[in-house]
Image (cartoon, helix red, strand yellow):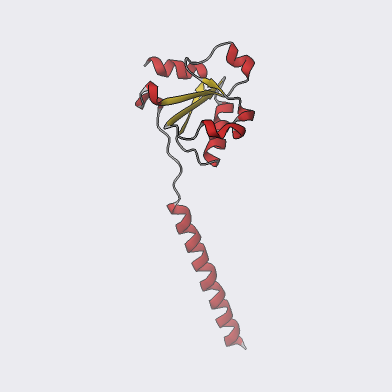
Length: 126
């Protein structure tokens, strides 16, 4: 009886260990999506998206940017398809961080959080 218990515990230990090792190896091979910096891409290749409200957008934004408010991102995913480089921005970088996460969860990985719209303008001037 004791031998059966020992064998049972040994079997469970081996199964548990191999599952843990397998899970660790899987985690190690998953890569996070990479994003490119705004500075390294030509301005013509970038799709600038202001995720603030239309009222905020009307007060000023990045030249050539489109306004897709954060709460509309998932409904307008088609506008992002096929874009090589996307820069999302807002007033402080908080909403654009959320927008970037939403886009990446939907398979759009070429997204950069530009931070505030003033930050994006400053980076464009460099």
